[in-house]
Image (cartoon, rainbow, N blue to C red; front, side, top):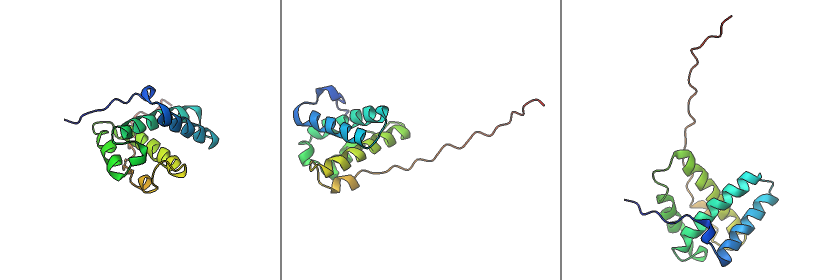
Length: 127
């Protein structure tokens, strides 16, 4: 059984909350939509909270990222894809901001997801 952790972003404080707020500002400056900024901020907060259980962002390494990815087991593929995309984006920001080592960005896996095939239409409209 995989142990889940508290994903509450509201419990972030100090430097962690500030890092997520700066990340959201970075996303706004990049022209991301309000919903993307909100969703990515929430997901980045989840990752920062998880990293906090393993020594914080300063101690973030590929093993930390692998452990975070392991907590995503059981989620739908698209959910995992979205969470990893947000984490990858946050780590790009954090690397440029000097919060994490640049090697962390490459440690986030990119899951392969097959697009769902279209259901063939058998309905023929009346003429």
